[in-house]
Figure 1 (cartoon, rainbow, N blue to C red):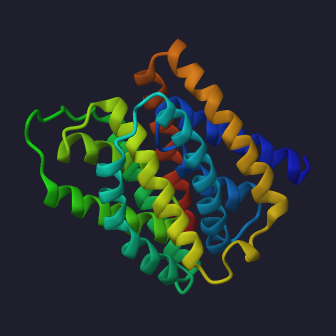
Figure 2 (cartoon, rainbow, N blue to C red; figure 1 turned 60 degrees about the vertical axis):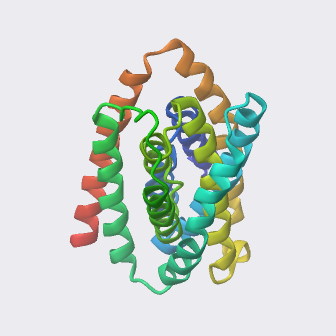
Amino acid sequence: MSVLILALACGAVVGLALGALGGGGSVLAIPALIYLLGLTPAAATTASLFIVTVTSATALYAHARAGHVRWKAGAAFAAAGIVPAAVAGLAATRLPDAVLTAAFAAVAALAAVKMLRPAPERERGEVRPWRAGGAGAGLGAVTGLLGVGGGFLAVPALVTALAFEMQAAVGTSLLVITVNSLTSLVTRSGGAAGMDWAVTAPFAGAAILGAWDGRRLAERVSGRGLQRLFALVLLAVAAFMLGDALI
């Protein structure tokens, strides 16, 4: 199978997961880039940041038109993650590939566990700015270091720390993800100039289109069922990557 076709297929699956689940799909991008498309872990995280940025920005536009984005709160949440994202992005270029792979496997496993657990209940009337700031900073660091969007972390944080409704949390998280991913991408050595565009461009294009299809799929199929299936796949990916890093 040619690299172009494989990149398109992987991008479509990642976009479909993002659109259907509102987060977590970008966690599949890095293992696909490494094990199916032949990129190194460092190159894969940089390419993933570009893919996450453009896909999230496109989805953000759709959610903004629907009125599901809280701009002021989202900007404050994103601001807390800008410096950590920049610092972690620089640090990632200096870490061994095995360390990046193991760290990513741990985060993927955490994402899977969170998806298997029931969604957090909204704490009415109880807003915790300090918790939101800490969550924003932590999300920025994870995004910068590993090249994942972190929607699986941002959405629960917005629901519990800022008492957002789920639709507003998903829409606002896309603003946070876009800002953090773009910040980390800009601060990485070489930035976009060092990316393999023959892989990254078709992957990103297919992910954008797949995200629109994913939103339609979510309206027809049980969201909880899709989430559980995705979580099990993610656990298998995490176990494989961790084994690869330790061997």
